[in-house]
Amino acid sequence: MTSSPSSTSRTTTAPWTLADLPPQTGRTVIITGAGSGIGLETARALMSAGAHVVMAVRNVERTRETAAAMMTGSAEILPLDLADLASVRRFAASWDRPVDVLINNAGVANVPYGRTADGFETHFGTNHLGHFALTSLLLPRITDRVVTLASNAHKNATLDLDDPNWRRRPYRASAAYGQSKLANLLFTLELQRRLTEARSPLLALSAHPGAAATGLNRHLGPFMSLVAGTVGRLVMQSGSAGALPTLFAATQDLEGAAYIGPDGRGELRGHPTRATRTPTAQDPSLARQLWTLSEDLTSTAFPRLGTSPGSPGR
Image 1 (cartoon, helix red, strand yellow):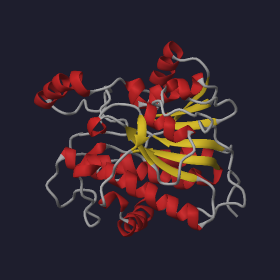
Image 2 (tube, one colour):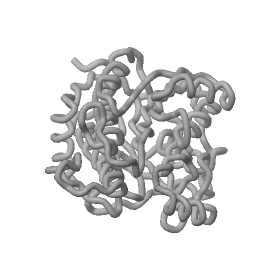
Image 3 (spheres, one colour):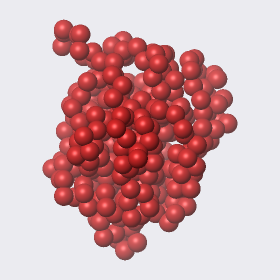
Image 4 (spheres, one colour):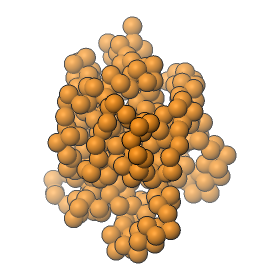
């Protein structure tokens, strides 16, 4: 594993901030959904620290304009639509270089009932299955870690393995979003178990931004948007602050399957620390069942990893 920069030399317990982000020169990071919100702030910070950032996005032209206007540093912008497994496969097939960190950041939240190009419920298909397939296909090229964004929304969620795509259940957007975020945490848990079993030094980690002021909840509807806007002024933090848990997870020395979030009340805002998750999100049996289902739905499999990270499986 490529040694990841860390803050092990810090001797104080002061809150971790952007100023503590270690140099990232020579490192390559792929960030899905890096064209806006938390992904954009994460990309900006990593580029400023010297990393080469690959912005994997649906709208290349819009992201190119955003990057030109707001960002400096080494970056490339590549097309990726996580709601279309054919796009995921094209992206993975075109990637022939080592990558230090994959950040599974992109996501949709509280969208009306819909289906991806492959017929999956939009939240489950985009937030979980798209990233599941991408990670499985890229894993032989990854040299350090995979960071997947989850959410506090997992705490009120259930995962129905018999109907993950809401074909029989009455659809509720918030419940579908919560299920996808619970799936993100279970995915990280089982990925780390498999990496450990394979004696791989790679890490699988999760992070959540708390309540960050981004465009992710634009589908809440008029009333809830008004409530969110009113309450948000009191509890929400900026997108740059919301990116700190991701940056911490991507750069610090952590144990496998660690989950990072804000340290404030309710984990809504604050500085990066260990986050809490429900017993369901730590259920190894449920994680294995989800993995098996996800492999079947995406026609992917955990790869045979090479003798050294970043080398193709044999």
